[in-house]
Each structure stands twice: as C-alpha cells, then as structure tokens.
Amino acid sequence: MLKIAVCEDDRNFIDLIAGELNLFFSKKNLEIEIFSYESAREFTKSLEYNKYSIYFFDIELGADDGIELATKVRIMDKNGIFIFVTNKSERVYEVFDINTFAFVRKSNLEKELPVVMNRLMDVIEIYTDNRLIKTHNGDIPMTINDIHYVERIGGYLYIHTDKHLYHTRYRYMTEFPFEFDNKIFFEIYRGLIINYSHVICVKNESVMMKNGDELPISRRRKKEFKEMYKKYMLSL
Image 1 (cartoon, rainbow, N blue to C red):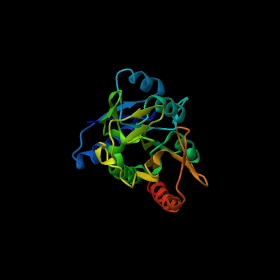
Image 2 (image 1 turned 120 degrees about the horizontal axis):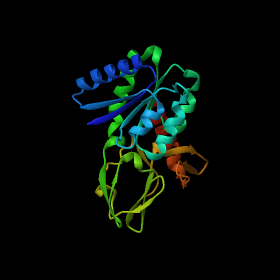
Image 3 (image 1 turned 90 degrees about the vertical axis):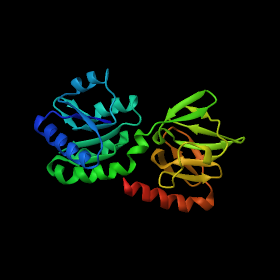
Image 4 (image 1 turned 90 degrees about the horizontal axis):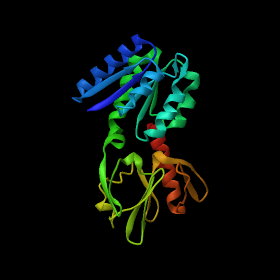
C-alpha cells in the first residue's frame, strides 16, 4: 500500500486532490492511504508516526513555505516522491533543487495531475522497491534511487550512495538484485555504472555526481552518454 501525504491549507483543494488520486489508483488496482494536513506544523508532527511514499505540497502553506518544508523532509527521506500543486508558477525552478518529481498547476489540476500520475507509474518502483543488497557488513535494504553509482574493483562490486560506500559480495553485474536498465543507468567507463538521476553535469573528461564525486568518462562513450542523459531529462 502506498501512503500519500497531502499538505495544503485549502480544504477544498485537499478534497479535490484526494478525489483525483483515489480515482486514478482505483483504475490501476493499487491500494493507497491518503493523509491530509492543513499546516506544516500538523504535517511535521505526523512524521513521528508515519512514513510516506508520495508527498503533495502546496508552495504557500499559509504563513509557512512548502519548499522549505520539503527541503527538511528530503534530508530524512531520500526516496520520497515530491509533487507540488500550486498557483505559484514563478517559483517552479526552486522546487527542482530538492529532486522534485513534478509540478502541477491548481488552475489545471484535473488535466495535469493524471498526466503526472501516469508518468509516475512508469518509475515508481525506482523509489519504492526495497531489496536486500548483500554486503560485507550484512544485508542492506536499498532502492534503485539510493544508488548513485556502482563500480567493479578487485573482482567485486562497490555501491556508492549519498553518504556511504558498500563493498558487496557480488562479483558480476548479473548477480545484482536490480537490473542496470539503460533508461536509468549508463556505463561511462569500463566497470563504472552511474545513475542518471544523481548526475549534476558532464565536463570534458568527467561526470559530476550529487554526492560530490567526480567520475572519469570514456571518450568513446561520452557522445552516447550525453544523448541518453538528454532523453532521460526530457522524460522527467
């Protein structure tokens, strides 16, 4: 079951969003549970006993700021899916600093929300599918979105995440619990596979990652990587 949080200071919009979500997921035969909050304080208190998969935030929450709220939540939840529903279209670029999935205008909610949700269905497992990764420090639960890049060193696979490096017990990519789909991953150098969603930019001979690492890229693979990365970005 997917737990969805809606933080919006207008009760009418909460009901409208909830209605659209219930209708959409019922057609997909997926169970959801929607939790609604009319203030940042009320929502923040709920984090003591609830964890959500998807967050719907308004940018302006009365006296509070939805972007600031989402920024704090992102520190605790690296895999949460953030969707902003607001009329403040002039602030759309601010929300992407926290790895926002989408932005929906309130004035066009009934048309834009189903489009966003259909796109979400294509990638939701990236954020929600936890699998145990066998490492030398025990089994570690991880989603595809947790993985910044994977490299093969000394016959073993090493996983780099936001803050940790894991020495796995896998020798080959085919042994890994996740498939390295080329829609999400790309081998920029022999034995070095990166996750598009954690790329900051491409330099002349390297790729900058969100965890601060700068990785070498093969000259013969650079052109293809740029094309594939562009397709990935356009699909967001």
